[in-house]
Structure formats: structure tokens, C-alpha cells
Image (tube, rainbow, N blue to C red; front, side, top):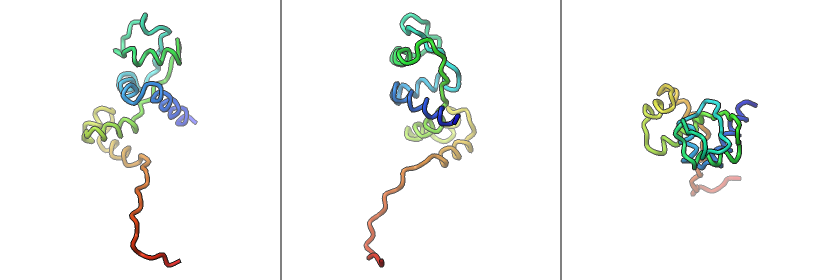
Length: 123
């Protein structure tokens, strides 16, 4: 159940902030309980998050603490799409390079489309 809650929060935050905003948010405060201010314009932003991130959060969770996921698998995929090496990904995620290999290998993949066959069906 814990994994489902974490995945739900990750999906909710990604939908709310967009992929780029979610990436910025998680890179800065991932893995901690984050206090969402009632009014982001009046609060001091000690994490360096902009209004584009704080405003939607304040609308959804005013005055609450939320557990910010690390989103390692998603971030690893995003970094790989950007062309980063496994070593660079490991540094950004705070894990070993072999851990990155395992993480990327264990990620669910879309099935590859089957090539049309020129062979006749026997049955």
C-alpha cells in the first residue's frame, strides 16, 4: 500500500506541475516533508521554488505538509532521455552506478511492435 500511495502522489504532482515543474520540485525537495504555504506570494521561499510551482501546490494543499517522492525511476528515465551517462544519473539520484543499471533495467517497458511476418500461418 505504501508504494501505491507514493505512486499516487507522484502522479498527482506530475499532473499538477507538469513534467518540468515536477522535476524541479523533486530535485530540490524530494524525499522530505514539505510545508505548502497558504499564500506563496507572502511566504519566504527558502527552497528557491518559483510561483509556478508554489501556486498550484498552495491551491491543492494550503497549510499542509506533503511527502515529496524521490521519483527515482521516473527521473532516471528523464535523465536518460536527455542523454546523461549512467554515472551522471547516479550522481543526480544519490545512488551507485550499478543501482542505476538495476533501476533502469527493472523499469517496465512498452512492448516492441511485432514485425510483420512473410510466413504463412500453419493453423
